[in-house]
Image 1 (tube, one colour):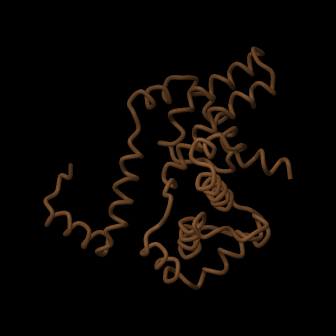
Image 2: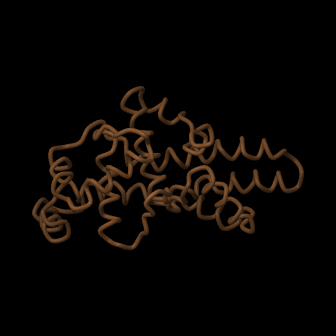
Length: 217
């Protein structure tokens, strides 16, 4: 149930989102997902906090980037516990990676909750044509280079818009022939969406982490 009247809501959309209802509802959905439970916050502060960096190193190894706190915190205590068990000799290195990967896949799947749309509206494809068009081919060529093929736009449209925004901000360096953390995140989303739209969410959630695919190539 909205806290706004219809007139108040339209005013918010007009003033804060330039009249773009889709952008408002996407922002509202994201804000709900970003709520961190009190239990997760307590666990993050109290469960082996000295192993936070080690846990983040594992997450970065498997995902190629560190997601936002609201995606990682629900699993961080479990990952730290696995690291602790390895450091005190309770489990082997192989067991460390095997058990950590289970929790890191949960983090990956949590990140993907923003990318479960089965299709996009006309406005999204309009944005694809008009949003920072000067970076359109730089982004699409970059994805093609790293993926070895041109992804279906149904899988990549939101990712391409995100990368165009990052290039336009001029805050991130994109080497010509080296994947950045943003590239890795983009490729991960595209591969997840490809499986999602072909085989369903259960198959996408069970799909290998990107590092597993890269290590096999």
